[in-house]
Length: 465
Ligand code: SAH
Image (cartoon, rainbow, N blue to C red; front, side, top):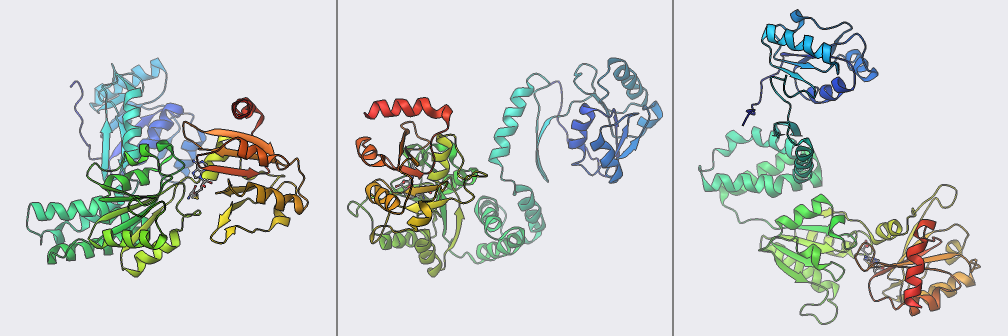
């Protein structure tokens, strides 16, 4: 190690910066996270720096730095982006013996600034001795994604409970308590009730641990997205990582199930043990049964759980059983499908609203406001719309829809076997039957693939014709 990492006490102490350009700006953004007194010396300064000075967040001296200005400072940054000024600055630093850094000049710097992941008071510093800044940034991005943004707050609340937690015997029991807090109870309280919910949840957790009460179960209703694991949210990944039991529907792909904790019990609620399709009441009971045993259940649903997912019935069952729950949203099929055709769901001057429809409901083909849907410029995304294509087509035409209105079907959106079929209301049936769609498919009425997507479209049409 040519550089040794330390955390320097800077609260209330002076950090001086020479320079007012981009390099100074970048360093100041970092330094402003500290509780140091920051002084900037620059004859000319970027407007943002001037604004920080006006807001009293830094002190700006509109002149070149001198040796005396460094005296007594805890750190000094040379950010003039000028060899001559840097050399002068280095001489002042040497004279005053203040630890100094010259931006982009490892050789002449007394210290270097690491890449930082900030979850104050948890701070991760990443350094490569200046050898591979790109690598440092990649590690930083990785950690940023892995450490919840609430971690800092959770840690501050945790700190205030340290003394209370000493009622628990040192060792295993105290460790389990903190693991429960940082791993589950804290993040869950935060996502359900915000910051105000964390301290009460921690107090309850401590009371539970003190009385040796059995663990309480919990259910996360998690959106698995359209199929590509890259389209899972960070929070969904975290829930999968923590789950004891994963109950999933048929839309969830194996690649996503692979992300569950190795020890987790995986239950296919689309089929297993219940014939071709599991009745809703049995799924509700299954969720409650596992959570009732104190397990962390992830109810994993394709797309977004709040869109045609029968979420409410499951939530009501869980609530009735007195089990805590959270909803983790996902990317719904319509979002993935519209991205696949390079379009947007709403567009100024075309449609200011978009409808999400289901092709059929419990009673059969679903009825809708066909008259409104048939109007020019309307956009609708039809879920579960394969078998109802003829019905939808008939209703639209009957209500005066222009037969040339574009219709686009996206099958297996976001997956490797994604297909796009571009047609019109006049042609949608038979085009859809001919395409023999066997994966999940989303039908857009009123949207055609963007011109750039035409190649894919033609390819697909050739393949199916
Ligand atoms: N909650 C899900 C929808 C469940 S209903 C969501 O938000 O996406 C099931 C219907 O969703 C399917 O019949 C199909 O119309 C649509 N769907 C789900 N995943 C899809 C995908 N990857 N590609 C196209 N359509 C999909």
